Amino acid sequence: MTNMLDSYISANKYKSVKWPVFQAHVKSFINLNYPNADEINGKIDWETWVYGPGLAPIHLNFTTEGLTDALNLVDQYIAGTAVTADA
Image (tube, rainbow, N blue to C red):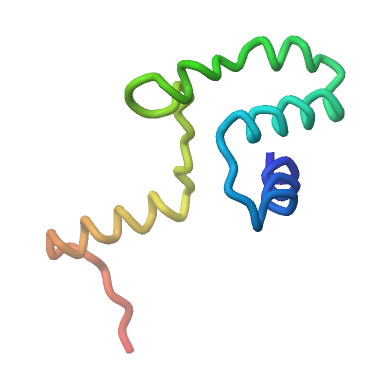
């Protein structure tokens, strides 16, 4: 995914583009890099993704162990139960 986005940005960095240009780039990238390209391209519902209400139909989870630890520490700090190290 990162390689596809990098190549798209590099190719279009000084241009104003519309979503069909991005769509064509994604399809081309998939066709060149995946043996089951037709299957992958067939699963992308571009009309719903671009014109449908709400967020994209795929939910991405960026939660990491570090984020969870930090949020727990914040909750402990707010509650006054955070453990501090002696200086």
